[in-house]
Length: 480
Ligand code: NAI
Image (cartoon, rainbow, N blue to C red):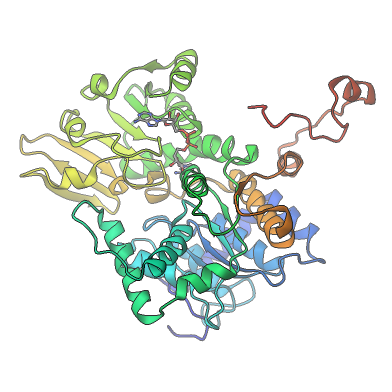
């Protein structure tokens, strides 16, 4: 490390390039920039020490610098081994006022193509503040930072870190290894750290599932805000963001013509809906696989064929998993696919496609075509193409969602951080969602940029509907 600012990124000399893209992104992120202007004087995050674990992209750089502008100290790691944009990471370390030679920004521990051991090392570094105090806020995507702290505390209570079993994934084995080394070097580290954390704001569906499960089991150690289920997050990022970034990933990975192909989308939740729409937009014949009768019916009414994976395995040209569930595409399914069928996942974790099973097929040959694109040739000669080793392909093969949609998600993140940090009494231990008036505020901040002219209720109309003229307009149970 050449400087006093702790960091580990691929190449600090990329900072100037990163800064130019951050400047463009700022123009496309009106929500975040409005929040910066609104809180420039009051700096509500003064005293906040935020550890972030979220894809280190250009858009995340604008989020990080917004948190800093509001007074926070920040340390960052990515939440995926392939999702970091190295120029963005370098620019955040350099900072808006520093340079690659004289970095004055934020400590970032992230680069594209981390090993699993490096991934957990980086998460630990983001959680380990130099003065030993640790963070007092977490900003998480997928729940890995939250899990690290919770499992650390659990194992400290038990007095030992378990040995990985043969059932455990490589990733979990690397995670246990990290906890073993921290237990040896800093006994009691996680309990101490957890005690100082006021709360976590969680970005995605999968992380939110983990939080509700921990809360249900009485294991949650601090309050959490579920950012994902803000309407202006999940109904926008998960859907319209995916509509943009799914085909971006497929195109950059394979450059195969999508029109006319049979594209199979597993899962028709918010993300699956965005996938199906974008593939149809390219002229693919889209087939949906679902387990929930409501989502299956929605897919059918939206005009998609709905069938089982067993049925469509031999016909599909492109397969995308978007379920947030495990073992959706099995080795047996992969083995029945057409020659050079393209297979990718866009759900948060890499367990939707059985990659370990694929690697274990006797006689299978893996050829890396280019980074994050592998051909897996079965002994009978036919092959499938797997994107990003089964990790989320929009961030592995492309650059994730574009700035404008991430402005919605990240404005919710900033508001959630302010809420948890400044009004802890309003958020006891448990999982909370943001108030609807805040959701409507996030949407409002994005209307002008699109030239949207909003109509206003008359007092009579407001009275008739039983809502205030200035909102909120919908009851909590409204589904949009
Ligand atoms: P969701 O819960 O709205 O949708 C998932 C759908 O998958 C549900 O309708 C469910 O019934 C279905 N499903 C579950 N098991 C299935 C199976 N075995 N076969 C077929 N369908 C099945 O969740 P959402 O918000 O759509 O998120 C999905 C995943 O995408 C999560 O892991 C989430 O964290 C992730 N995500 C990824 C993003 C990215 O940029 N790559 C952005 C936002 C979310």
